[in-house]
Image (cartoon, rainbow, N blue to C red; front, side, top):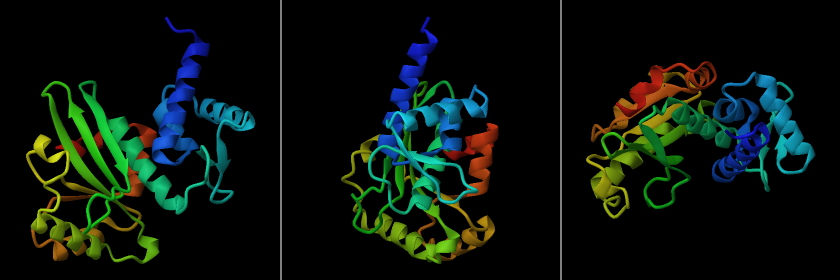
Length: 226
């Protein structure tokens, strides 16, 4: 039986590991990942202690937003970084007892035609199989045309320039593209349908829904790996 001190030390190390891999997490995200069984102020208190001890750094986008935490240099495009972090928390919160996260690689540069915001692999221990997904965060307020991303994924599929990737022998299909948007889901689905000439699988979710499921523990997103 681990002492509370030992549990806390292991949790701190896991936090540092996740901050290194994900770039930044805000208080709510840390709560969902590492303090789910505790009252919210427990996470805030521990993060404040780590900040006071100079083990993590923190900042906030505005006074109405929770603090976000990072290790060394503050990431650029912090809205985008934290948005992808919500997807990370979301996926982690939906894993069942027979699943493990195999990879969650950010800003993948291996594809010339497109740079996914993340590439995710989930291991099914019961079936001894892997499911893979591309992840895209669509920030509607940026004004960027997501149709361009859709066309690039179609071009990647047609070109077969992905066939040399490590995951291809482990997968039975071209990975679905998980899209999380700050805008209207239906509007984005219509744009995707117009540009998706190869009929790739795009699954669109709102960022508000992702946050809600992370915070409230809803299991609706089990369809993510369907």
